[in-house]
Every structure is written in structure tokens, then in C-alpha cells.
Amino acid sequence: MLDPKLLRNELATVVQRLTVKNYSFDEQAFNELEGQRKALQVETESLKNERNVRSKSIGKAKAAGEDIAPLLAEVNQFGEQLEEKSAALHAVQTKLDHLLMGVPNIPHESVPTGKSEDDNVELRKWGQPKEFDFEVKDHVDAAGSLMDFESAAKIAASRFVVMHGPMARLHRALTQFMLDTHIADHGYQEVYVPYLVSADSLRGTGQLPKFEEDLFKVPGERNFYLIPTAEVPVTNIVRDEILNADQLPLKLVCHTPCFRSEAGSYGRDTRGLIRQHQFEKVELVQMRRPDESYQALDELLGHAENILQKLELPYRVVTLCGGDLGFSAAKTFDIEVWLPGQSAYREISSCSNFEDFQARRMQARWRNPEQKKPELLHTINGSGLAVGRTLVAVLENYQQKDGSIVIPEVLRSYMGGLSVIEPSS
RNA sequence: GGAGGGGUGGCAGAGUGGUCGAAUGCACUGGUCUUGAAAACCAGCGAUGGGCGACCGUCCCAGGGUUCGAAUCCCUGCCCCUCCGCCA
Image (tube, rainbow, N blue to C red; front, side, top):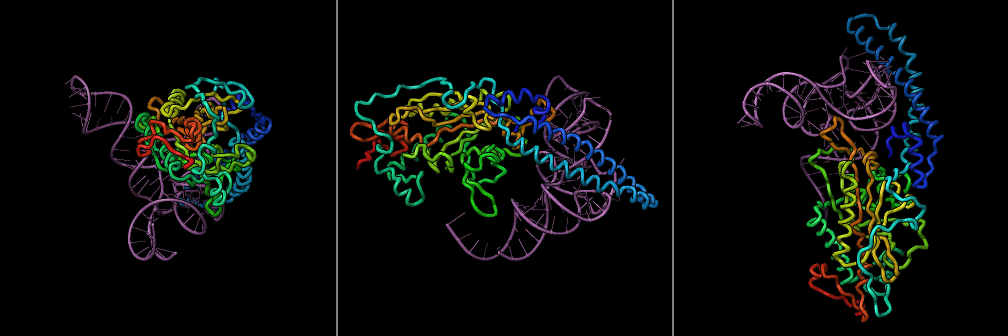
């Protein structure tokens, strides 16, 4: 959520900067509601003041043993008026809150303008795509029967997968390798979290109220949702908390499954592991003091990149343009890994700084010793990495002419020393 | 599933209808003392909305209700704890 004060005081600037995100802010609706809110609030508050003053005098009169009947008669008329005004205020406030919850974050000034992902700006490339002296397979063909979409479709539906034997193990090895690297080399603390979350948590990170159709909702009285990313439970750890300065920076790493409805992506990436309803991800989340958050974003991006470097997978980093930026993000870098099967770079990580946007929704604050008041934190997160897509990248980049797949060096200890798998067998 | 007990400031913990936004302790901040630190002592210290401001409003889990007046009484929901039963 944006700072309501900023909206009131510098509306024109905010509206202008939101156009970078291709968002047109309804200035008229906002001004109308804001005007009503202000008038009603002033009226309600002065009525309340009047009532409080009189009630106190009744208390005093009663204590002094005086007759309070005339005072009671006098104060009665306030009740109705007050009720009316405060109901009206409540209604306006609710509308205003709803409007505010639907306004996206303001992009950072360094964010390039642009409409779609075609306008994203390449920041750097790492590694050389390998030349193959045979016809490369995509990951589905390379994996053969070890990756079993037929069984998954029978058990659940399309966009699910069953993995067998060494493929399942390779998938698990990737997860363990990522977690261990972030813990040992990058200074993150591992957390284990719920995979079902409340609507409040989803509002905190920005998935609700606008993007309910992307989520799996669990039927029942409890209103649980399956997490679309570990970002939701992990970031909400600090909801309604005030952290001490010595607790910062808080760097958390978490492995979870992620569940996405993929409503509205019917034709896209229907083949293989790229776009699934359920996938594993290792997520990096940081809570930082505001003046460190952009440095933190660079660091976190580097931590995600390091995984690909250790796996020796070529990739590039792009800066998302305004039009491709997510609802809650102020700035986002995507890491795209080279997929020989598609002859293309595909997203494998998305690293964002949300500044105080999520923190304001969550009321997540810290005590800045230099300030009297608690201040909002900045939240930063990124995939480190999407495990399924990393598996795709390994299969496609490490395939050999004879159909076998070489296990990247850093994964072998997680594979019981295995150096190659033979999907055909 | 059954029976009880609770949710109050950063934390702990008083407060059961009328200057209670809330005692007290801890933590924190400033000061005295000290070569420095600790201890001791003194002082300060919740959050949030509106207003240029004097000020005013709101907040004692959440939402309703009773009342002139609610942290305090009533209803509903959520969460936590203890005991019994069941169970991965």
C-alpha cells in the first residue's frame, strides 16, 4: 500500500509515476472520497469531543451527589447525530481503503519505461551457451520415462508431474544444494513455514485483494489458500511486529512447494515442467532498514546468480521495465537461464525490492535508534531458485549425444557420487 | 471430541462501569556520580489519524451490542494455555 499522506500531498506526482507501470489512477474518485472523508471525520470527531466532555461532567455531578437528569436529557440528542455521521465515515473509509489496497507500488526512478517484457533491459550475461554437435532435445524428451506426465494427469490433471528414480533424486539434490549454499555461503537462516495461509497474509504481501484468481483456495469455513510462493508465509513472519535494530538485517531462506492456478495461461507452456500448478522453489527473503534495501537487492540477486554459476548454467539478468513490473514491486531483476531446447533465455528467478509497500500492509516495522517513532521496514525477495525450472536447465544443458545426462559437479555429493544418469534405461 | 482458564504498551504484569491511554517492574533514552564501565540515584519514555498550530479524535485480540459514559458488562468470531480422550 502507498502512503496515504503521499497520495494526499503529492497526488499529481504519484499519478504521473504510476503511468510508468501503465496504471491509470482514478484521481477523481480518490479526491471525491478523500474530501468526504475529511469533512465527515472532522464532524464526527467534534461530536465525539462534545459527547465525551458532557459524559465526564455527568460522572462528576453524580460523584458530587447532584441531580443528573437534566444533563442526561441534554446529551441524548448527540447519540443519533453521532451514529449517523460515524456510519457515513465508516462507509467512506471502507471505500477509500479498498481503493488504496488496489493501487500498485510506485516504480523506482531507475526502472526503464516500457509496455511488456519485450522492453526489459538486459543488464549482463554470464556464461556461453554450449555448441552441440547433435540435435538437442528439450527437457521432456531428454528426461524420457523418468519424467512422467501421463501418471500425473491420471492422478491429478495436466500441469502436474511425477518423477521417477534418479530424476526425483536430482530434483531433490538441486533443492538441497541451493539451501546449503544460501545457508553456508550467503548467511541466510532456514525457516520452515505453513503451506496454507490466511487471507490476511495474502493481503500483506499483495496477492489479495486483486489476484485471487491466481490462487488455489481451500474450501471450508477457514478461508485458507495454498501458497503461490514462500514469499507469503516467510514475509508475514514480521507482520505486526516491531523489530529491534540488532535483529536486522533479517535474511531468511525457505524451501516450499508453490501452487498456482495458472488461470488465463491456457495455451502457454503446455509442454513439460515450465509451467506447473505445483512446483518447488527455494526463496530468499530479506527484511532491511530502508537505506540499505537497494544494496540488499543487488546482494540477493548475486546470491541467486551464484547458484547458476556453480551449476555452470549460462544466464542473463534483465531489469524489468515498468509495464512488466509486478503489483507490489518497486524494482525487479529477472534471471533468465539458457535453455538449448528452446534456444531461448527463460525466467528462473525474479528478485524484487518492495520498499515499504508490503511492510505498510503488514505493519512490519523496526526501531530506528535515530528516530523516535518506529519506521516501516523494507522487504526484498527473490527465487534462489525455482527448482523445477533449474532441473529443466540442467537436463537441456547437460545432455549428451548418447542420451545420457551428466550430473553437474556440485550436485554429485547429493547424488551418492553418481556422475551421469541414463534416462533411456 | 469433553472440561476449564486467558488475550492489556517493546516485554512482563496490575486494573471489573466515570479525568484510565492505563499502576508497577524490565528494556530503552538523557542526566548525576566515575579515569572508564557497572551499580545506585534523578528525569523521560505506547501507537495512530486530523489540524499550520493551540489542540482534538481513535486504539487495552477482532466485529457487533448495552449505556449519558466500556479495558471493565453482553453476543459472535479468531488465537493462546491447562487437563482428559483420540491420533501422524
